[in-house]
Length: 86
Image 1 (tube, helix red, strand yellow):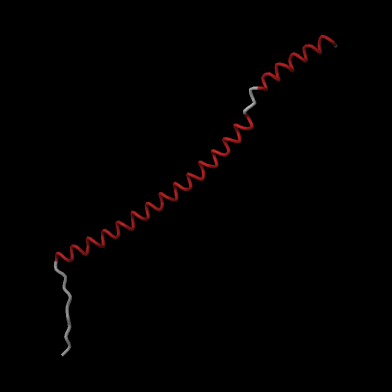
Image 2 (image 1 turned 180 degrees about the vertical axis):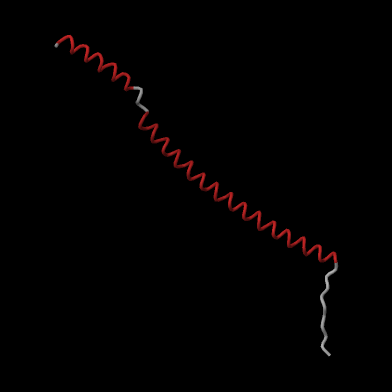
């Protein structure tokens, strides 16, 4: 005779099994969402850093623009003075 053992789960064990499976699926979804968030944050960080570097460059190259008014005023005075001598 062949002895066949049937493994039957009680309703309580079945509920636990479904709970564990559902928990595992939720865990996988949470991991996927967190990974997507991590990638988005890294991309944003790179973009912000590039903006920061570009902004510093703009400030460095335009930091003395206020002196152009002095240059303009001086050139006007020079043109006026040259007009008196010409």
